Image 1 (cartoon, helix red, strand yellow):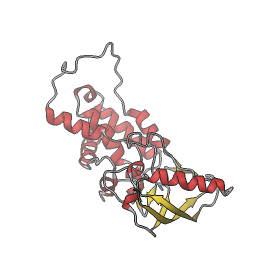
Image 2: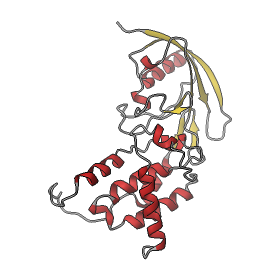
Image 3: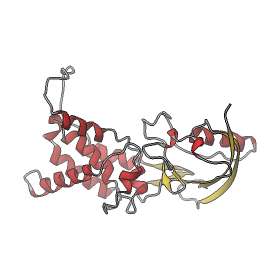
Image 4: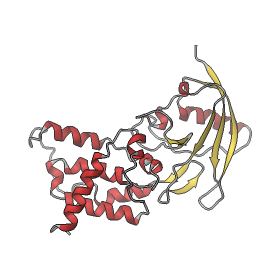
Length: 253
């Protein structure tokens, strides 16, 4: 038999990009502890709709911690209080009866507000478009063992490739830097033979695009690593810096 709890939500409401936002206090009674956080918001939205009020706008898609669409700051932490957990994977059993939960959008100069908890994270896509790919023409899929790669490099590349582009690193950073996101996308390609040909060009292009999009500089505070739902290591930022400096002073410029 599931347990229910009563909650008070302080939710950021903003009608549009140019509207003035505010916190709206809402009651969330009889919330099952078996619900995910997004399911709880669904229930609250049903209640608001029945009352003739505007439901809370929030991003979501797969609800399996894969797509990176969901994301909000819960009690001051992107994706909530649990480590290695996206907002859709956060369950209400981790909250107590009578809790007050403050929910607000990811805040960064580069993330323009759209409505309520929804922000425009397309600047992350534009950084990928600037160089987060391998530009080669291929025929059929090659055999998996066609190019021998050391196991430790494969593991490091796969660790970096886990980035889902949710933007939690940006929301957590005091400078709203996207260095962890960029470094993960640079690392997972640069570590593999297929990506090394364009490694320096990629680092230059993505860092410059990051600056153009209005993200801040990395202060090595490590909040990004602490809040990343996929536990991306800041060692990738060190690798990005090496790639960038090598490219800046080498023949690739």
